[in-house]
Length: 254
Image 1 (cartoon, rainbow, N blue to C red):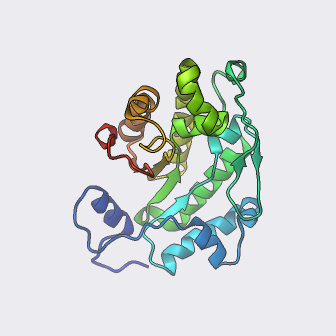
Image 2: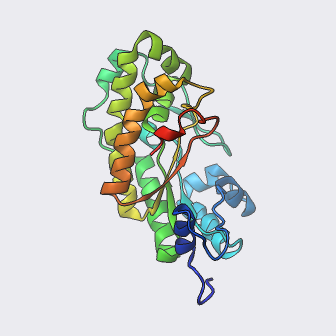
């Protein structure tokens, strides 16, 4: 799988992330659906049998020279907290009605949310551990962990949360702050299972979505806390995917 005397995939990806020159450009495509479909699997197939998902990701390394595998499951924290989702045969799950209809619903959430043992959590940890066992240390395992602000949008409804920033800012801050702990908890479990890199998308906090002032007030404090935890406590690399126009706030991304 690897050429003697050349960089391993892990070395290649880490060099690029450190802005150093690797032996070649690393291939780290977000290929989850392509990998499934290339073997004739649907997302439903892979939810029923996690080893089919693992097989599809390993094949991206052995047959397509990809330099990483992806251990990604959608809405993990949200589903573990009780969010109902719409499951399609071959599309990622989407939130049904918002779990948080107002302050009263937020107060009902457990103060110390237990993620370990939840079905969706165990599925994620199973594929993470299986991927790490199959690719070893030479190929990094990338785990998905969305921003607490994105999680808040999924639990409350994005439009509702945007309106709350004007009409009920305390609810937004309380909800985002609440989600920091389950985010830490899940990434700790992922790291123990074998995640090397944390992939964090946040497509709902760019310039076309909210102002820089709102970003600083409602999003940035949680990012500072969680990024620091990932880097300095867990010792993991971070791939932050902002999505959209962030030109007026890139200086705030750590």
